[in-house]
Amino acid sequence: MTNFRKVTPLESTDKPPKGIYILPNLFTTASLLAAFYAIIQSTVGNFENAAIAVIIAAVLDSLDGRVARMTNTVSDFGKEYDSLVDLVAFGLAPALILFEWGLKDLGKIGWLTAFIYVATTALRLARFNTQENSSKRYFHGLPCPAAAVLLAASIWVADSYQLSGGPYTTSGLATMFLLSLAMVSSLPYRSFKDLDLKHRVPFMAVLVLVLVFVLISFDPPRVLFLAFSSYAVSGIVTWALKRRTGEKVFAPSNDESESYDSESGSTRDKMSN
Image 1 (cartoon, rainbow, N blue to C red):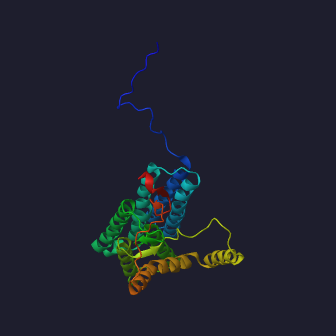
Image 2 (cartoon, helix red, strand yellow):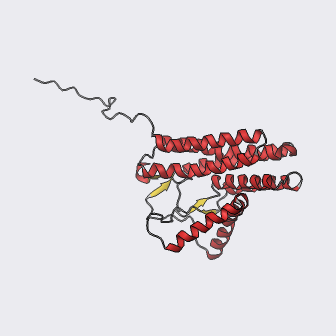
Image 3 (cartoon, helix red, strand yellow):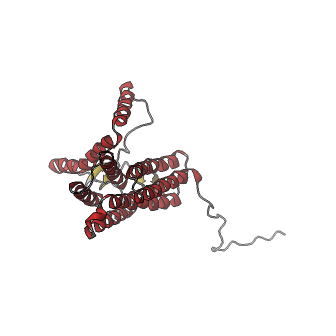
């Protein structure tokens, strides 16, 4: 007679999955490498290379979540890893670059402002990962990748046109402080996650996209600076317009089945939380 052994509650027939997904984490690691390279370049005075590296890190960060969704490799490990890399790439790296560029000449107020930027980036990421996003169209506060790209573009413009010292350093200090406040604010910023990129678009849309790339190629630092400056200001404009009309930006919606666990776009199903 065959003996059957009773499985105790402490024993589990379903073993937890081992290992991690390679493809999305490669993009995240590449973003970390670009951020580290940016820090190294800033310490030796190559601020243009440092700024470009931060922008590349932002591009890579926008891809890892999308790659994870496309390949069905979304994981809790990837989410946590992405958040840690975001703090380095979009908090520590821009702060150190701006500090090396000119804030160190301002003494204590310079490094304290840089620290405030790093701290608010950490708070922004922590709030984003723990807060239920009630709107698919808007972010609560300025996303830290956008703030980092704006600072990087500012340094790129300053280095390209040899702008340094005096009022430029003060402007950099004020910009960093204002971006710190914007990240932890409740200003609504478009996430652009509601754009449908999977279906056909008019021919003119492709032509506009080509013209955008041509425009950027004329003067990349200035165009990026103007574009992300406009995005940073758009939160205040949107808040004022919504307040005037009485429309609630972050009102809960019953038709949303996904929440975003990364500012770069990775998603997770609410039923799995």
